[in-house]
Image (cartoon, rainbow, N blue to C red; front, side):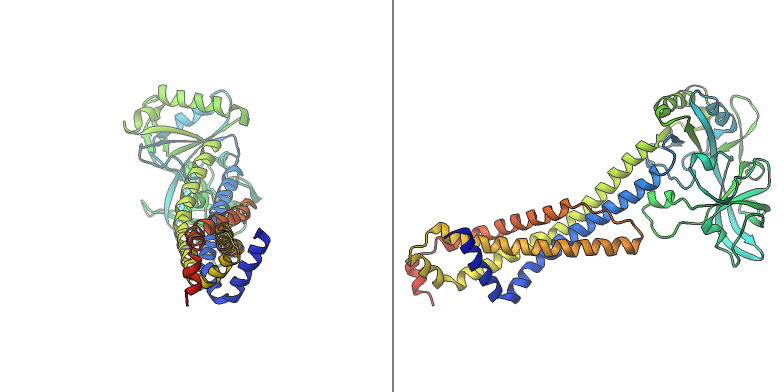
Length: 421
């Protein structure tokens, strides 16, 4: 019996038992669809995160002091780590060879932000220098950066739209400092596009969060005594350092590490267990890939259980089919069919069920991935290799599930089979 004839007989048997065949392949369909859906969502999430991070300036580094247990991926939305970098440190890093700019970053907790008698509670006001926007590659929709020493603020678009009336450049806002209850007034001088880096790295999606940016002077008040200058200095939680070109990032990173470890104020202000981290964009991207790949593999591993259940279903139904067709097997052997012919017949049927389930599962998986990406707001990232993988999975599942039933059918005694009722 040739393969084509065997496939024709197998397909006829599948069609004669439509409901049974559908229920048999359902486990494979669900398994393949679940794996492809989760892998697609994982790839889409990874691509979106990397696009967000890589969309920033490739020459920018993030300088923090963190405990060994902290995440090595710095939040891109707010300062993190220990607050130990003085204004003196910022100025000294700014003078290092190859550094284009150094922008400090910390924040003020505000109990409320008010505009035209409309208030919004609990906002974090990021304080820095005007170079912060260039270091973070934040795009201005209107207006300009704030000026150091002036009572000015910059809002991102969600922050400008969170009041009853949208805020525009030139209008005034006020925010209440949580620590003292002091009300601080400011003029809005710029509106910027939202940066979702902080939310992305926390794996929380949806619309970008409101952000308020203000100059460290005159709003920021946290100070320490500089060990080097013995004067009171503003102290920050992070410094953003931009190299003059991407090709100088590694060299600048080394110089920053040398300065921090040898003569910085932060070296004496940080806790002994804390370590300096100068993280480049490439390092962040690599760490994000590792995190998202591990997460995707874990979720996909759970989905593979459905494939195992599906393969058991195929094995079970093929054993039932062998029992139902015992007399047919006896007649085939009586007219000259060899063991390999019977083995081929049932193995082809099992493979056809597996391939059919995988193909349908791939289609359902793509639809599920697309629907999930649309619901979460991710760009769809799918690789055609998954179609090939789905078919390969179908063949493997069919072979493994049908091997024993096919072997059992091939070794059926023809005399016993002819007497079977």
